Length: 221
Image 1 (cartoon, rainbow, N blue to C red):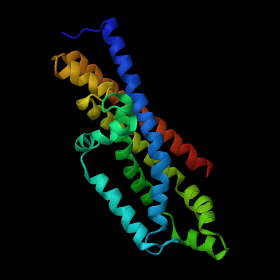
Image 2: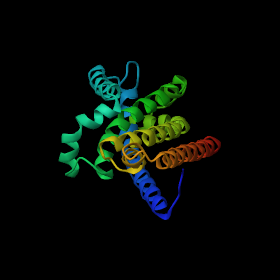
Image 3: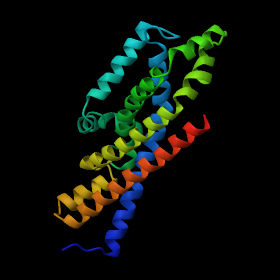
Image 4: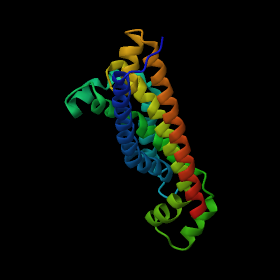
């Protein structure tokens, strides 16, 4: 028998806010650090404006290593580092550390792919007019790839919603933690169901907002 009391509503509301907090901060860090990393991966690649095989190989290897580790394992491996950074290894703030570390290389690869889709003729035209590498990056690459980058941020955000739920397995807080503590450990199917419904709604809203933003950017180009 499902029940929905004031106590359940408070639990769900608090856990939802914790999830939003974790995801929002992680997306911000992934955007601030992942996009420049993706740009660096692209411009240092073979045949690009700042080709540097050594830097590109090192960065590519680091990104691939972190992308290869399943998130649940990354959570556990990073416990000492998380404790060093925030002073604890459980809770919503602690969960932001592994979430961000997982999201940064993911965002970097999406950004790199977006930039590589740009017609090389546009870059060559900018070079022929004497544009510096920095000018090409800021005036050509980023503006041309902006809709695709915005789409990448949306994809990253949705992935982080799922990752944040996994963080609940080790006490990361949020809806995942609520589902584990009440839905799984206490066999409260109603809590589990409400949690899933909220996560589905959250993902749908993120996708809708992301699509609207991408559409507006594409129109205003």
